[in-house]
Image 1 (cartoon, one colour):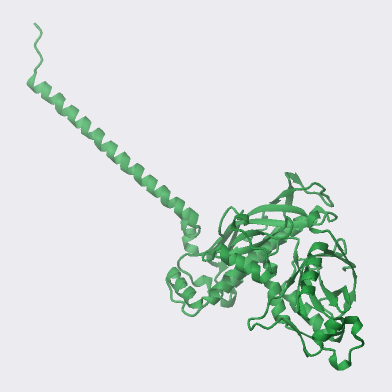
Image 2: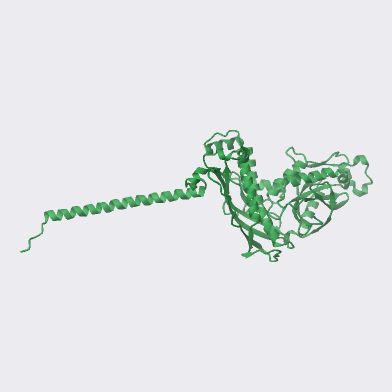
Length: 491
């Protein structure tokens, strides 16, 4: 339960100055920060305004614009406003939730979307029903689910310009109660500790022939595989700067701390016969995971945040790939038809039945790019093979309202593999000793080995022919000497 909330002073004051200089009477946006169950405290790092809808209308407005601007200009000195002039808020909760969903993909470990903020007059805020506010918070929470089940709260910050003040409330996702909580501002970002982990994974997911067709789709098989790997990852031990992490360990040193995760051996691996399996999905790659930790939190929380960052990154890449393919359905269907040797016209990739594939199918997942954000803190974005850094910069401007342009030289791409290939292979290609059908890299390596072996074989054949020719010439010379120069008899 969150009892107090601390906001990053520089960012919140900057947002207040921006709103005060503008002429808008209402605004809604999302809160980026962290809710710490260990400290029973919330941390707000930044306020990000929700952009206008596709139709150009704001995500938050007044039911009646008459009196809204006048109420802001008069303030407390303008006298008591009439009941007819007080306008309640209209909030497009679904649009705010979609904005929160996309921003949450860009946040690294230890940071998430923890609620919403509203800029309005005190009268308009009080005239708005608590159920509308709670419903907006609820849909935002549903769009940005947390891997930590104990986190069931979200925050609501109201910035009032008439009178001028800040107020923070905590809301349980399952209820409509808005409970006031203590709120103050302080320096937060400069005190955060940074943890980094290079995590390589090789997930092999069997495709069973006896499952219902709806469960054998590309999306379901890969989602289930990621979920199973998430459970395995939770039991992994961690090395921090080369030393095993202990319970309730605290780290006070500055700088970036390197973490290595050690997965346990699988002792209860299921043994399945070849008759039960029709194929295999190989999901492999490398993730550069980051986590940011408050100095008062234990190191074990940073390890948990790193694990969550890894799983969230896998899920985000899968969602981005599926969203992209849905937008280009016809082209994707044609490509899949060529790759699989079948006709799948009109069938999106997430509905593709993997057990029907007869040829290997390779899909390249988006690659993670790290972007400088606030202080020494990074965020991330994902690029598809067809996208460039300019696409990434446009999303930063639109989703995060980043006024300062991002320089390409400041972007970091630290993952050892630029892409995480996903391949569905025929099971019989694997059991017949042809692993090159399941791993593209192995295929290339096998191809180079074959070329090398072929070259060596050709060299051997050529040398053997030369040796045979020399031996034949030697026999001919020896025979001719015997015939034309007979040995003299000894007297």
